[in-house]
View 1 (cartoon, rainbow, N blue to C red):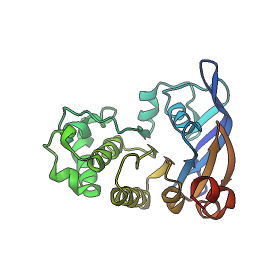
View 2 (cartoon, helix red, strand yellow):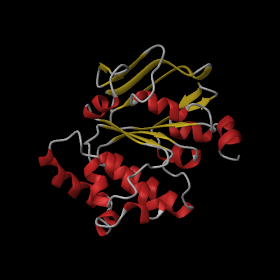
View 3 (cartoon, helix red, strand yellow):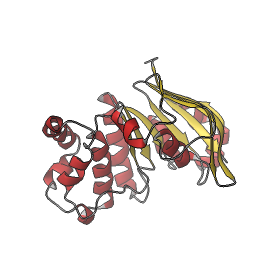
View 4 (cartoon, rainbow, N blue to C red):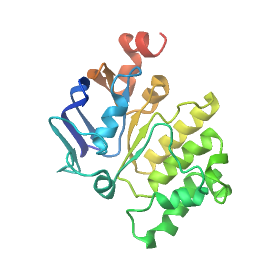
Amino acid sequence: MGNKILTVEDMNVYYGAIHAVKGISFEVEEGDIVTLIGANGAGKSTTLQTVSGLLRSKTGSVYFLGENIAKLAPHKILQRGLAQVPEGRRIFLQMSVQENLEMGAFTQPASTIPGNLDIVFEQFPRLKERRKQVAGTLSGGEQQMLAMGRALMSNPKLLMLDEPSMGLAPILVEQIFDIIKKLNDAGTTILLVEQNAQAALAIADKAYVLETGKIILSGTGEELARSEQVKKAYLGG
């Protein structure tokens, strides 16, 4: 704890004339789970896509492990140890589970693949059972596990998860959040974007609330879960 793995400073992102992210700054410390919560359209996914190089900020910096990565190509950012699990999973539906996982290791030496597969199969025993199965035939929860496993194949130092509970039944949401906690306990730092504020705050070390592209609140997960403003807006309280 205490070492900053990611520092975002003055991020401003536009879609044409639309100012989607408005000068936000935040930090992720090594070993933490940090969550960004907020309503649809608040700028959460845009923030992650900008950190991972898929979008560009007009201003500011994105420091990852002390290096400003704001101008780097996405695959260069991935090579440095920052992986994103995209909203909607985006697995390769026609490929097998194992082929999907191997695709996640494209920035890694081939010699690391067997060992990394073992690690992923230990975290996700269901994927091991279905390693030869076509990914498109998996359930929604299994596809989410596969998307997370694929990202882990790149040996990330920071794993960014974009709406991992989206479209899942409540019992599967609980399972996915248990897995996120276990990954963190095993040493993976996590930046989590999630509409299920209650579940996200329950496991977060630190949390930020985004509203129309701005950070309006920050604190520990526990502090924000107790905040009357957050309860009213996001927790149905």
